Length: 175
Image 1 (tube, rainbow, N blue to C red):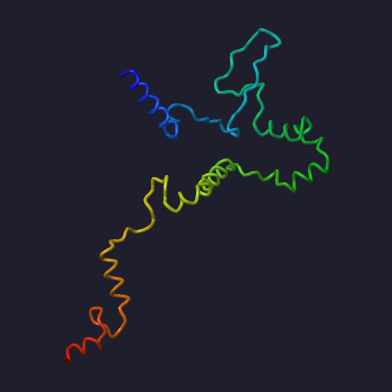
Image 2 (image 1 turned 60 degrees about the vertical axis):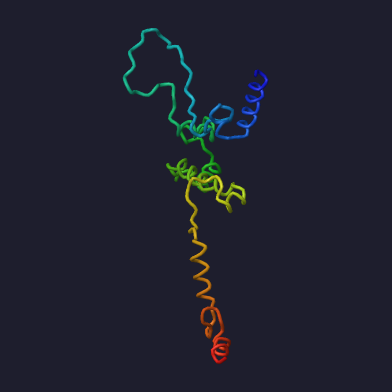
């Protein structure tokens, strides 16, 4: 009895390990965060004097920079903060690259393009057989009997009646 239970449990675990939805349910798949949506927080600092004033509700933290300023500092270094220390070559490069006209919805646009590419990564056999989709196939299911009748009617050449040539029918009627 105990051996049957162990054997059944082993077979169940092995069979479920190949199922991707079971792996997701058991937490065996890796899900990494989106690196573009992770925001780091500035570290806490001790004030110079301990005469603390209460923070204003909703006010930004004084030690944190805006995301635009952080990006500018990461690309241009500390000189990029005020913009006056940028060389003419750097400013020409930024102007030609279109740094002044940044699309604010770029993350959403990239997400849409990535979602459209997901279908391209499917194997050909799954695309042909429509395997792994929740949507109905675009093809219409045909009744084979009605389709055979329709094809026989369309493909019947002129001079035939009920699938028999008129000349053969006329000879049989003459006899």
